[in-house]
Image 1 (cartoon, rainbow, N blue to C red):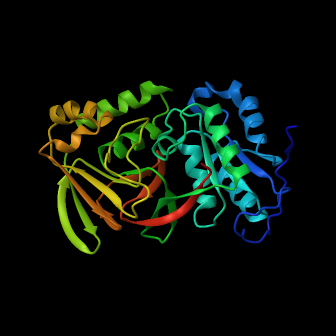
Image 2: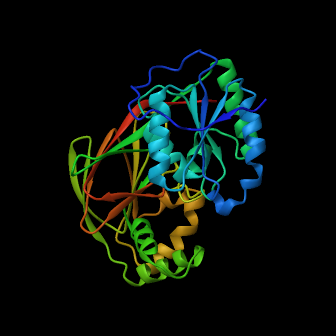
Length: 320
């Protein structure tokens, strides 16, 4: 029988300990009903039924804004839960990861968004019902697997975690412009933003420090990956492994508009890294600075550069 309780959680609850075997501790489920343009919203009852087979009461965490999602996830973790599940895309997963990182509370993503890169790159089924089955089985069996996360610290000492990729070049500039636009709505807004920023394309000077070794590079695109993919299957950092304790850095040098447009389709196969103007690096800690760039982590606005990104081994435990 499916049991869903309201998330009226105490604001002063203490920190969560390791996952408990107490069968009364609930599985918290963060739901973004608008993810993926709501194409999976009708499947939510079935997803919840599959999760309920873990034998735990379910606590549904609905939120109207990312800020609410983050607050409710953190409150649930502090209250003491058996695990946290995010039903949505990478943005929903991103908010949930802020709450579970470093806590030992198990986490499972149910891919139901436009981009489901973290779920796919960490081995979860692409079908929401199959992913829910995987999570429920892992919780029943007491089985989790460790995965690295990237910890990003800004110049004002704010800390944010991400699971997939930090975009800090042309792609981030496009996102920033699109998010400022009030018209048109939907995907066309990004198409227009791309055209505008292509017309304005110019290389920027980046300061890049890899495990203490400083270099300056001129580039139109820089990405830091804990996982391989972002943007719904673009393998920007194709060799990234979220279990190796390292970050992959991809730098696209000062290419022309025509070259950038020609290289972009190769992102889906990851073969762009063979282009002579593309350089790849690997490091445990990456310092990244450039003027006029706002970074986007897991597709979410993360703040302006400079930032320091550190790979944190086994920062999360996945229900799979």
